[in-house]
Length: 247
Ligand code: PEP
Image (cartoon, rainbow, N blue to C red; front, top):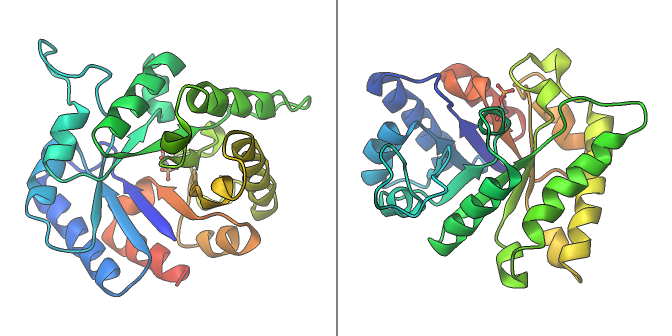
């Protein structure tokens, strides 16, 4: 499984970042899945620069600009240069801050051009009785994949993160049965863009209140390839327990 810890802005001190990185290193060394951590940009530079372990690094976001006169922006080239291999793109917290699908597409393209694997976040704000949220997900995926070449499409990871499930507790996360349906649905959309066996090779992650108490059931009931974990990845004990729960 691919398990990505999105530290968001929960981790502000370098001491805490180092402690969490040490836990991630132990989990990765024990062969507990592919472990990726996404620290804040300063901590990413500090930790990834000296990384000699099998932990991999993700940036939490990148700029839609390619550099130059763009004060405050962190570019794909900059994060790839310090050793990140993934980047989270289109997270709902970035979309809530005004990020459009057009900007998400630019970021995906910049990521790919710099050899980074984009983790494309999609997800509905709420579920409606008419199931319009399914069309919303289809649009979010289609807008990006249509603009990519067949080779580029193979290089993305899709993270399904229903907004209603983010930042809560395991009891309010998606149910295993619903997750199974959503993974099948997303995989079906992917087959329209990646014929043959292409779609089956794309990693689909789930994010939204994944904790040690629900991760095993979510993994067991669906063909999910991994998880994007927010708050539970910023506590050493919780992250360790969560990863071990699916080992
Ligand atoms: C997220 O926002 O990417 C996320 C998964 O958050 P949480 O685990 O805190 O719900």
